[in-house]
Amino acid sequence: MRRNDLMLGMILAFVAGAINAGGFLAIGHYTSHMTGIVSSIADNLALGIFRLVGSGIALLVSFTLGAACSAILINWARRHARRQQYAYPLALESVLLIAFAGIGAVIPPAAAAPVTAVLLCFVMGLQNATITKISGARIRTTHLTGMITDIGIETGKLAYGLVARRLNHPPIVTDVRKLSILLPIVGMFFLGGLIGALGFKHLGHAFSLPVAALLLAVASPQLRLRPLSPQ
Image (cartoon, rainbow, N blue to C red; front, side, top):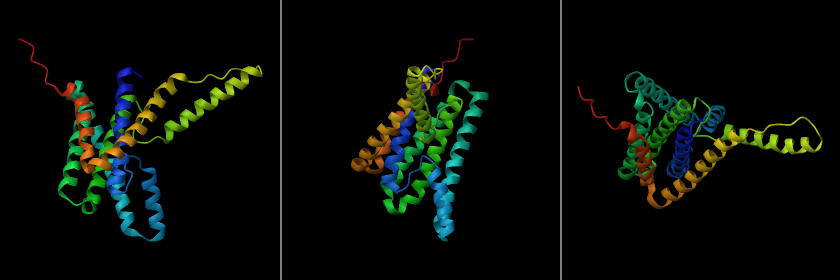
């Protein structure tokens, strides 16, 4: 993975952690991963709580539409403005986070929760699809299960390799490069979660504004119009 792509992945993991943790305090839902939401749909369906089934389906559909929107923007840009292909989804994510802060400023939190939950799921689907496209599906930033599993596998290989060396067994090679990618991303997700939770505690919905500014700062260099070449 290129250094710039890893840096972007770390920034987006930070954003996902912040929005996931801060969003939970705001609306009572984690919105960055769908595993729990799909499980809750199944649980509520079995219990006959169909109102919550509908809510879960709305969140799932919103996340899926966010990912689809990212794919549309990136594939359009690849054909018309290749230099900006990843800037468009990041800029849109920034705008949506500003909208999240605006909704929280004018609507009471309890009344705003259903709308903001759907909005944040869309944002997370948009972001996860974007980094998936950038990294060639090697990393995700909105959920950690797969990455922590891979870290465990590589750590196990490292531990077994130390034992194998003492027993003169064939060596086991640990993918150090993979660990050097996964560990910073997991760390940045945690850091983002901590800052997002503290931000919501002190700022409310407005905690998303600095996060939106960070995304816009990342996207803006690619969004600048290049001067026309002289004829």
